[in-house]
Length: 521
Ligand code: TNX
Image 1 (cartoon, rainbow, N blue to C red):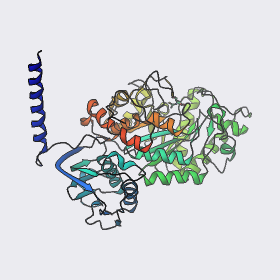
Image 2: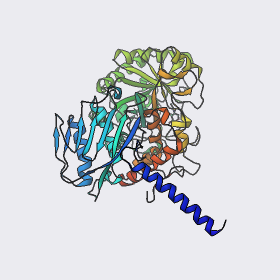
Image 3: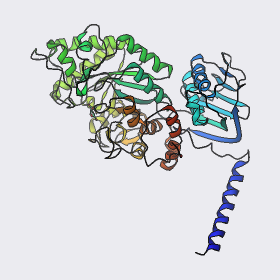
Image 4: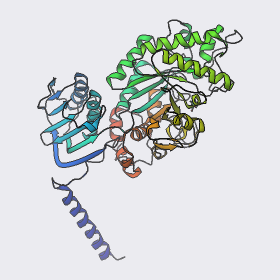
């Protein structure tokens, strides 16, 4: 190819690009908004205008909490006064309204309209306003997430976003048993999860290595059973007031806490705390290793069920959400008939305390109550017990370990994490359809998606960040966005747009080479 030919080709390409730009610039063009929002909205249409938030802007909100949340973020980064008027949201540069939303948005969805003069978010419930606010923040420049004053300009592309979730359950699990995390650390993670419209926080509150919630009727569980963790550190536990603080904080981010007490296996910390819970009456030593499957509650002992009833009773009383998770996984030292009889009784106890039972999918070996929910954590795409349970009405939360486990390494080089379920790069975490993955578990059998973070190797908040970001947003998108939006190239670009935000917020994310990160992020 000679130089003249190359030049001509370049000029022709430029001409095409310019024509494309011009064609998109007209206000009437039904172009998409800039590709920055995760999870992908149901629909978005540009109107070609731009709104700029200035120092004289005002906020109005029909909901105090959501208005205050948005004002807090915007005031910190813009340095503007942004006075907030609550109730009877009228005109305001940004208005959050509990009227006017189309019926299709449901309890969690919203409609966002931005024009040259302002932004209006309409929803049927405060949760929808909150999710709409997350979208608005992602339409503003990344510096909006800064906690110190930044220069701006604070522009929002003009257009309309109509949005609502595909699944009712979009969860993240944090294992606070293998390593303990403080209330402040959990709240920090809640804030990060909220950015991606996650609405359930599952707390794995007990395991062989630690019991993390104070139970008044069995005080040694926390004071002794909570006194260590993997590797022999000092562990810790939540007082009931601490736990309630987490629940309230989560609620302020429209997130429901699902507490888990893992039974009948994964119970060494409890068995070590009370000799009388053991079949032989002898308490084992506390455990700080990482083996699984060696401990079991004594399923033939009547006291075991008194214990379960009292623990579940106290936890249910502290938990406003509808679910209580009984674990039930890897009970390899419990004979199967003892296991199923234990699950039968445990689910009745949970129901008697007014909650729907959730368990790892191992519980589908038992015959379950209609309200029971199974959480699939297998690495296969067929499981006959789960399929049979789904056929009889059991709802399933999808957490396939080789796709959704946030403690798996990204690549062989990842320092943290495990490999037993495989390596999970970003596109692997994104590349499956929760609604059409497990044989016999499709459509309305699928309640949603959850990303569990087991913490055998996870010690700090930075460790949490590295394993959860960017895979958690990938799972959050699978839980929220319609399958019709699924497109890996588009996703990697939208995910890349989050990089500068995470950098601004100090989120120690993994710089996957699969993602198109903008320069400098
Ligand atoms: C399996 S998955 C477990 C956990 C471990 C995890 C580590 C499941 C329900 N149980 O006890 O922490 O693997 O990846």
